[in-house]
Length: 115
Image (cartoon, rainbow, N blue to C red):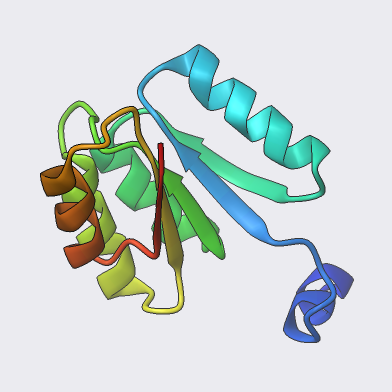
């Protein structure tokens, strides 16, 4: 086990985050801001299928997820990654504040929803 993994198990290491958004500039900005704030950005993805594959490989603690993705929609991504790793926390970061979108995200396993 690496020092980082041991620190994480002891609750002292950085939180491992993955950022999923189809807009490269937005995705990179969120990843950069999280990294500068002390989070460990372990992966990024630009579409739903890529997000599921990379989340399984990178094993983040938190997934920051856009709902509107090409290919597989964010709600489906959320269901699949949470089913594969129930300890994963999903924060939906979306421009939509529609009640139906929020409800669907939470029902799919999202832990939080941020406009």
